[in-house]
Image (spheres, rainbow, N blue to C red):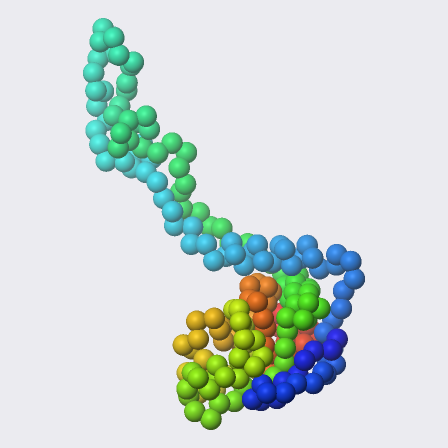
Length: 210
């Protein structure tokens, strides 16, 4: 598949062929959906908790006698129907995590990359390089490639200088190609990856660690 290849300053571009896996039909779509749901579920802390009858603060004493008052019978003031009582069927701490096998992760990553590249939302830059650790220098390069929207920028490894130059850009997320996942590729408006970065990404899809 052909992608736009930009020079290191982002000023000019050409087209270059990359061995991005291509798919027809729905192959990998269900895997992509399931993997994204799993990543989102694994981010959930699962710490929400409501008090039951056994944990809410209050007395278990019967508030008034069973008969003769003309009121509905009540066994305790900590029951759910009372103010400051327990919560009926409320959420309790639980583990939301889902396990996804390596082959499915790899298929989902490949399908996500194919979809973004097919839609023209993936660009390649020769290398990420700024002469000084200044945000305006990194932003100047990025403005030539992706002037608007949230951008995921990838490299095989990031120098400390490049990280410092990019970290103050609110719309930019800096990630290494070895760590990116299918959810990351789908979560941003544009993906800009260095040549070494896309080589690393494609090696993962061809049997490396997913």
